[in-house]
Image 1 (tube, helix red, strand yellow):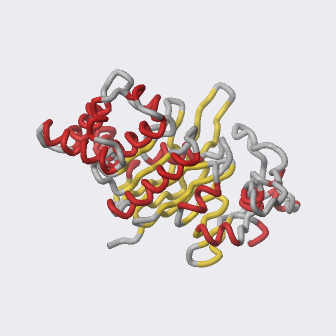
Image 2 (cartoon, rainbow, N blue to C red; image 1 turned 45 degrees about the vertical axis):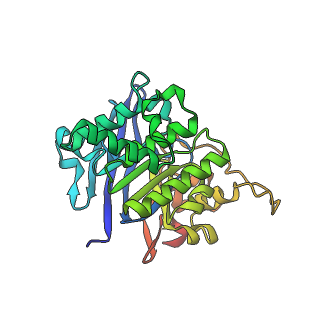
Image 3 (tube, one colour; image 1 turned 180 degrees about the horizontal axis):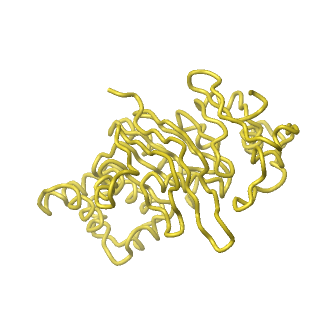
Length: 318
């Protein structure tokens, strides 16, 4: 069995706007193994959500995959027709959207929405589909009678559990969770993350956890991929990233994490993310980098392999 489940190679995703072309994901390569949780982290606008939506080919109309490969279990998703891709969504890749209230149909009971997803992919009776839906709800800690509820009748945490049930009911190989704990209190957030971790073990699946919170990724993910301004700048096991971050941007993200016990000073990353219509020359982080040298301004660094599992894109390690 191949160890790699998902291989992203030199992926470019651009948005065509009235101001010009936004290079949201610009030549990103990433490999995710089976039964692995990868935290995709970065500030807002770094390209992490665009990368997630590109994998399932659910970009907005102005978004376009310009080049690259997205290979799931040996199958290049960019070569599939729209009808073939619809069969992949839900069956092989489950998506947990950031805002379940807007992602769920407010006019349909949640049971009908889960059953519709099942019947789209599996040739079974409606009763069997309802039984599967009830089991999926129980697996995420909701009673089966919630199948008869409308989304607005559920709390934020319950709606997020419904989204996870929708994403996992067909036992996909890969789950993409886009900010799954946004707007939830810390107790519900912890329950949702525990649920995703347990589902990874039970379903033998991989998870891409998209989050701006590197501390959440450090706690829950096996590896962390750090994105900035459309580029992937560091990728390594979580413990290595946290104990010894290599890229100055990763260092800045970690230094900005509050620690009430250590009472350390919180250091912000000075400046703002760049305009991706007109990104900086060379390394895109150089205008904010405390270690930038003249070469950083002229030439973009290559991704460097530090060891078997660790990569960094920085002239400091060239």
